[in-house]
Amino acid sequence: MKEQNSIPVTKVQRATEFLKTGAQIGSNYLKHYARKVVNPETTKEELHADNAGDIYKSLSKLKGSALKVAQMMSMDRSVLPKAYSEQFQMSQYSAPPLSSPLIIRTFQKYFGKSPSQMYDSFNLNASNAASIGQVHEARKDGKRLAVKVQYPGVADSISSDLRMVKPFAVRLMGLNAADVDRYMGEVETKLLEETDYILEVERSIEISEACSVLSNVTFPKYYKEMSSSRIISMDWLPGLHLKEFLETNPSQEIRNQIGQALWDFYEFQIHEMRQIHADPHPGNFLMQENGTLGIIDFGCVKVIPQDFYYNYFSLINPDNIADDERILKLFFALEFLYPTDTAKDLEFYVPLFRKMIGILGVPFQTETFDFGNDPYFDGIYRFAEELGNMKELRESKVARGSKDGLYVNRTYFGLYSLLNQLKANIHTHSVFKTMVVDL
Image (tube, rainbow, N blue to C red; front, side):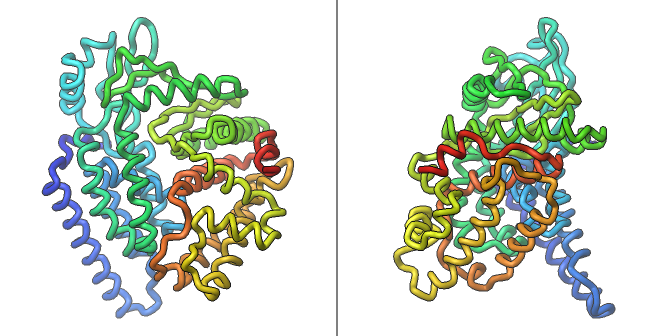
């Protein structure tokens, strides 16, 4: 993959790149309408493909929060047309890498040394490149290390980038403007945390040590003395990312073992630690042929407020779904409903949210669940498509759902997606869920 020699870092440079992309999208729409005149049966698939390619090319050049938002949306097939999802998934671990001179300058800025002075060996060619930073292989005192280097200017451009991303999210993805406004603050806070590598090292050590009691999971060791606010040094974990792992045709037993490790990892964090590794995309997991799951990148961690936790997981209890009085209290507490809602609003939203909770809560209601059940996931995507086509939701001036649910929902959706791709059949009715269902 061709290296990138510079990143637009000033507001003017980045705004210019967004404007160029907007102009190209406008041109794509004109081409689409011209095609439709010639052939009235022309669909929007080609338009989506053109737009997705142009947007990804621009965001890859900008990197940072703009590319991260695209990565987040790519995890949710219900939000994006297929062309966008496929393009944006590339940002998970295969964005264009930075050139060697930029990497060396970053080391000199934060350590006063070049990589060759800090490590016994350092490969200037990136092994992986994603939205916030890229990973290089190094060796020190006989140990194989992974060194994550943050792209220059990422932290300083988050706020302005998110303002520029908003029109793309509203227009192209069909997202509700009220929802986008409400959740941008939560996204901005998390992205600022993700660019603080000192915080990431602290969280990585805390969570990996706490989760070391779990079976079939492994974590790298982190080296504070070779880390800074923009660089992290850690052990190199063996294993393959999900796509490459599945290409080895692993047995169902190994798929189930890795799937169980994934599920237990998230359930332990949520119910024991009240915080979660909230970035469950394939680039953050390394799978080994013996069924061991390597877990990396604790940059995005969501701390779960106690009140939100109890209300959110009370929805899992099927008795609550059937209890009109109880479910209304939970919907108000979680801001699905508001005191200002009219009787007509309640008539529309209550059955809609009941159906949503019923569908998404299915894996929690049985001792085991087969995430290879494609009809179940097809049903989720059909329901999400129905929601996207509802005029009442698109034009609502009120954001529905607590902002604390943004990253929790994203985490569960990402987890479900990973387990579906693994076709894993696992035990889901754990001691943690027994605890919360009976609250």
